[in-house]
Length: 427
Image (cartoon, rainbow, N blue to C red; front, side):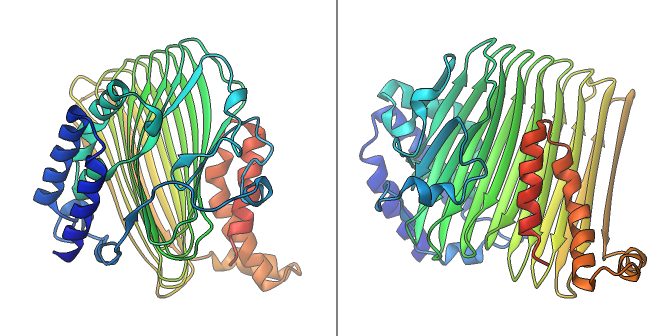
């Protein structure tokens, strides 16, 4: 009850600045949170992921940048420090000096939540409102949201260079509650890299609820790099809506942090839509990474592919729940889902649950999962050829995880991500 009272004070403070309509959306989310509370292990979707540690944190709403950060400080952490298009948020607020907003091409419009007019905030909240009623944590996001943006790509606009979106946390014991909306217009093309990082080693929470609207014949390539601090908490709920002949390729890399839950739902709503959702999680110490995915085939002639790989060390824990749902009208669906896990420690644990629910009769669908250790024969083979034991182990682990990066379409991005993964695999 104490933590509920704490967040109620935060909710009341942030809602005082709202216009009546936005306040009503926020109030509905708060009422939903009060009804649902924090998820518990008794709930099927949270059966293996405890929120007790998160509930113990008396987080305060982040209110924007509190420290001065130089470009050099930021660049040392960026995947693409020389990226042409950079959007850098510091404690939830876009930092113009660290960003290159003035270089964004014609046809690309970004609008920060704090800069939206009352009418624009209402529209933003209206889009995200259905997502805020999924569980207790999405409802809490809707009640406390004071950050985020909308990013819109005009019809037929092809963004030739990747946009790098960076979320940097500096405030300890801070809660960052963001709502994001990304629209890729008809025939448009977008590549977006999203990085989550921290300069504080104290606990904090990144909570994001977001909607991706991918219109007819649009293409959206997305890479997420979750590089939270050792004590960082991360919660993300993403809804993807794909229309006719649209294309989405998402690559999710959960590389660090104490606790993380990623829920990804993809609604294939237009004939001929294609979706690929790949991911990789690296678990060390006592950390937890949880991925819940849903790919919902609603119409005919759509394809989807899903590959998730996990490396578990220390006393860490991973959860993967992948669900593919094929409606009765979704004939000629092609869908494949795979989850492989490599266990490096006797104390590490993974709970994996692939699911297929098919109500159509003309489909090609498959799923599979494996949990295992390093192949002793391959390890012995490398050592027998003069390779150091530890180096041989590192080679085998790298070979296991790099398959996810290999599927990134852009060659330069693929090589850059592969380098990052090699650095991260400190086994």
